[in-house]
Image 1: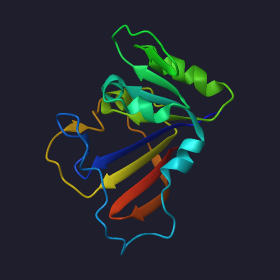
Image 2 (image 1 turned 90 degrees about the horizontal axis):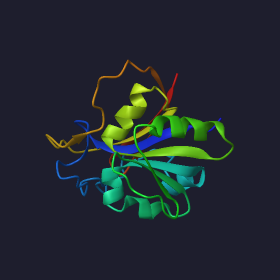
Image 3 (image 1 turned 180 degrees about the vertical axis):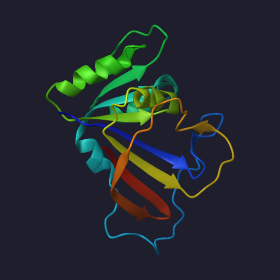
Image 4 (image 1 turned 135 degrees about the horizontal axis):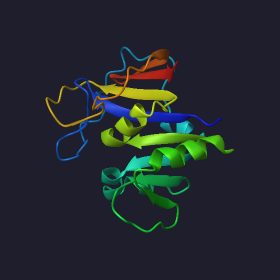
Length: 173
């Protein structure tokens, strides 16, 4: 069965974007002194993905344009017509993605944002969590985790240090 993976960067205090949705702070700090031998390769991750799921705010920031060769599902309550490789779904997004998960194909990537991730957390259907910890404390913004979901036990499968960023890959037990 296809995996549903979450891949996001967050500040040390748990935010994935500033209050205004900006994320220019997501960067390394030109310090490779603690880098691990294994390094993260986002392009390699994308080779194993054929569906990307994002929230409407990500869509409105044109983040879907990065995924022209993938099917992009956008979670929204606004009635928007599907076009090209982009499909829009409302409250049934979990059922749609679970159905896709059972079909043959590559993995499914949850791209963002926090409200979308929270919906999938509540359904406990994320198989893999890839979180890049950016060495910054924002003090506020849009959180990755909203709470209100049951505890989910994870197992650390891999860690990478790259340019001051710690990347953690957990799997759902």
